[in-house]
Image (cartoon, rainbow, N blue to C red; front, side, top):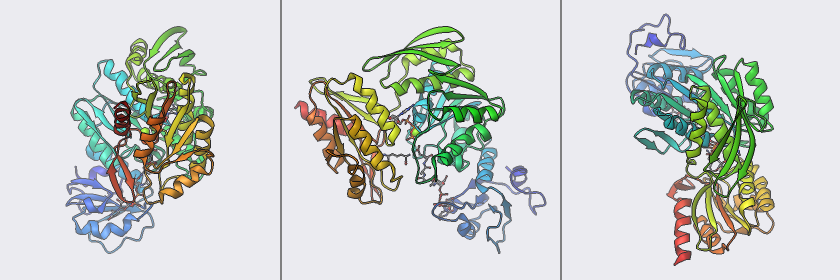
Length: 484
Ligand SMILES: CC(=O)N[C@H]1[C@@H](OP(=O)(O)OP(=O)(O)OC[C@H]2O[C@@H](n3ccc(=O)[nH]c3=O)[C@H](O)[C@@H]2O)O[C@H](CO)[C@@H](O)[C@@H]1O[C@H](C)C(=O)N[C@@H](C)C(=O)N[C@H](CCC(=O)O)C(=O)O
Ligand SMILES: Nc1ncnc2c1ncn2[C@@H]1O[C@H](COP(=O)(O)OP(=O)(O)OP(=O)(O)O)[C@@H](O)[C@H]1O
Ligand SMILES: N[C@H](CCC[C@H](N)C(=O)O)C(=O)O
Ligand SMILES: [Mg+2]
């Protein structure tokens, strides 16, 4: 691509050499090579402008920076723009060019990974070449890769979308995190539809208020989706109403799902331990669905997913039938094993208050004995959620074991103490392995154990080191040990 092809995004008009070949797009000077356009972003830790000289030395073709940034004295052109992150996302989209034809994005505090995975599965069952992109990585035909961010940065994202499109993927679902939306990571994606699950407390270390957090999520509806596009909104959340209002104001085709839903109306649910039967009304026709997943919240996720698939062209009957074969996303109320006396052990990714509340409430009706929970909180993340989660665990579980999650740079004892302050009677076992083993050893017939917080994760970050750690592996080892 030539530099002049970035016209409309960058003020390239009047550039000395508009025909120069752009070989790449980057916001990290360390990856710049000859011909790359470098975007200097003001970040949370560093200011990219400080690396402009470095980028130029490495062969950058041009530098893009925010208006008023103090970059001067470079021999390469410097373009000033109002919003460098937006310019980065649009440039990456134009540079890589191709995207799967039908792309949908889902936002919300909880359920994004599940909805992205379910939507892909519905499409797969409808015979389409489909992919999903999110916290657990990328899943596509012949591809299953672990990822690090929920919403990848725009350069990685558009390279990925091009690869998927080149490989014949026509449908892709992706998670839109509030960081991703706020940082314009999705602005270059051609979205056909958007989904909303719910809103609760999260990322209060990044967003000053919950309203600010909601506003970031609303960018999906009021800025990114084209007018008239379907917005599939879960109707039974306290934040459903303001989300519906914003989507309507943006001229979207609002489709609500859930008990209060008008598009897919949930009429009745019958829960069993590992599955649930739901009656869903669509266009005055009642459909019986046998959902092979545990947890009330999975019905919400399944309905949002079906709504996204239906609104982008999958026939209603096909989409609803596909729900009967859904597989849960890894580490989401994932039944890892059962003790000889029949007590189930689940691994779940609940690492925020609402998720923990939902997951503990979901298993209660099927637990004749005690609900036991093992959990902690990650370091270098929202500190305010720690006592809230301590209170929830104490209220909803019979035995609470407070352990370490990913302490990162924080002192693990301090994190545990903040949870324990609101969890009288809880047992403290810092070593996560030991905590899991002791919890499994405690299980009597009728009990249920939930190991929460890390879900699919395969490492534990202590300080700057990430050591291999898997809740799944530890649960299996503890179950074997108990059986021996
Ligand atoms: C707080 C945050 O979101 N940070 C993201 C942000 O980084 P930043 O812009 O703040 O980076 P910075 O370190 O301050 O550096 C500023 C700029 O200088 C550049 N730089 C820096 C050093 C150098 O030598 N040369 C250079 O050019 C950097 O590349 C960057 O462009 O933009 C980067 C590129 O898109 C992201 O990789 C990075 O995510 C970090 C790794 C992160 O941990 N993010 C988490 C919090 C996150 O985004 N999570 C969400 C939600 C998770 C969920 O709940 O589901 C997600 O979508 O994953
Ligand atoms: N619709 C929902 N409502 C409430 N809680 C949910 C819902 N869906 C999932 N959860 C809970 O949240 C956890 C994370 O689910 P999931 O990974 O699908 O959400 P997410 O939005 O992608 O989360 P993250 O932002 O952490 O990636 C689950 O393990 C479960 O405990
Ligand atoms: N995407 C989230 C995941 C948190 C998972 C939890 N295990 C923790 O480490 O806090 C984050 O990075 O904040
Ligand atoms: Mg996720």
